[in-house]
Image: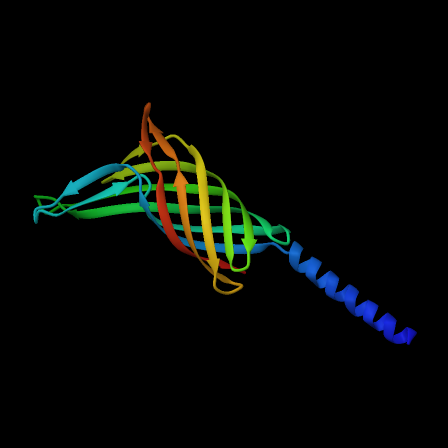
Length: 189
């Protein structure tokens, strides 16, 4: 009887240790997002009558980070990424013109997890925001903003996300709105 009780106590402590170990293990996160919004920074009209533009809050974003669970339903995450919006086409002379707005976002978020849903919020700091118009670069000031994110976790490793960022970029004393919405995929490993 005592032997059986000791065995159960050992099994319970191993299970508790495994849960605590899982709670304390940071996860690597990978994100890909499609962002839309922000103020238009440059537009090109083409000979066929069409046009294309780049905006301060739009483009494709990639990110990598670490997510740490600090309580059973609360986690914190830090990530760094790259966000870029590009437009290109031929002008009236047949020359290719390309516009690109890019920045390196650094995000710090706290998430609350309930079942398969997660809602988070925090700060985003954008390094080196640059508008490149056919090789001529316009360097904006680094900017800080707010970020809200919802994730639906369809598996332990995968989630779909919806986010909103509120940020403003400054170039030579002029502010440009970079706020926008995004949808994306996130992986945790």
